[in-house]
Amino acid sequence: MKKIVGYVFLILSFAVWGIIAALPFIDISKGEIAAATTVLIISGEVLFVASIALLGKEVWGHIKAIFTRKK
Image 1 (cartoon, rainbow, N blue to C red):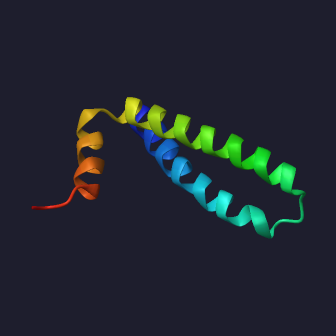
Image 2: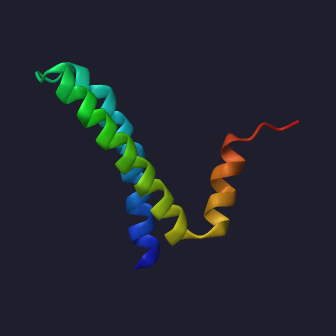
């Protein structure tokens, strides 16, 4: 159950960035867009850290391996 919640949090943490990209196309004021962006960035980071805490060190190593360059 812990792994499932961790993967759901990981997916949601990346989905938040898609929502942020869609905000300018929604009919709301610039102040509301700024507030929503702030809340979404913070919640995305919290979800990502919580997912790594639930999934463990091996998943974190796999994520790091995806983004590191091979020399």
